[in-house]
Image (cartoon, rainbow, N blue to C red):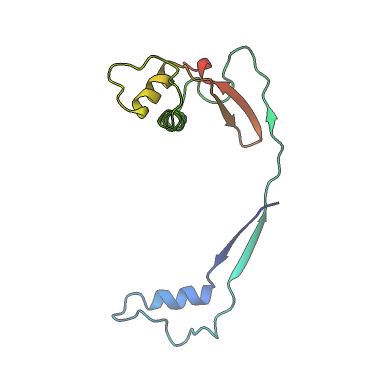
Length: 138
């Protein structure tokens, strides 16, 4: 189980520091709040919400979670991954277009042609997910 932690400044320290902000040359903390006088910072702990991943059953080739097209983030992630593969020597899956001089442009062309055998996993906050092949996208 993962526990998230953060600290809060004590109220006495905050108020003493805010009093000195507007004064000239007030870079140091005031004498009334020294390290020995400060209470320890509070630690607040939250238990992580536990849930189980469950797949949404497919209904034909219908996208059930999210929009029926690639978001700009999904498109950028797929394009970048495919451009890396192409730059490391992977064979292109389509005939390279005339203007595709770089692996990034070829990756963009492959994504637009829906030639890649890649699926997108979209996950909801309650743990439900759907694996969507990119050829289902509009």
